[in-house]
Length: 132
Image (cartoon, rainbow, N blue to C red; front, side):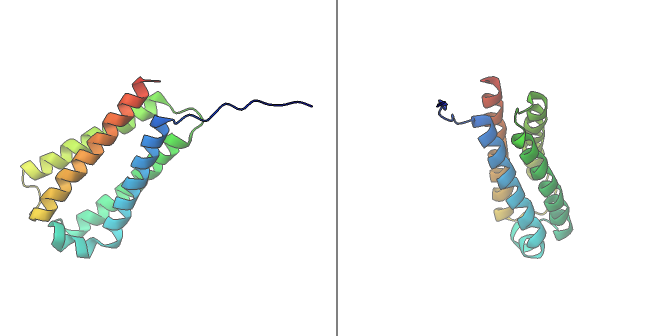
């Protein structure tokens, strides 16, 4: 009889951070697509822009999920995700600072909160990548 010792599964912080990023991003994108007319009044962003952002975010979420799903997560692909997240966060802050849209108060808070969350994902992903 042969016995096989199994090692306890360790938490892979990078994989978890990438998957959580994909889920949150996908949910955000789906909400923008499904509720664009309702969100326009609440946020102050035109529904066409919200739909475009929603479609982009769904595609991006699928790409991030694929990066996380690989048996060995690519450092290069993770670097692209981190860079894209940082770019999104900076563009979000830039949209608020330059009055790119006629944002409502709720819209301003939402965009800045979203920027902080995305920057947080980038920070965790970069930290986890560097600790590998």
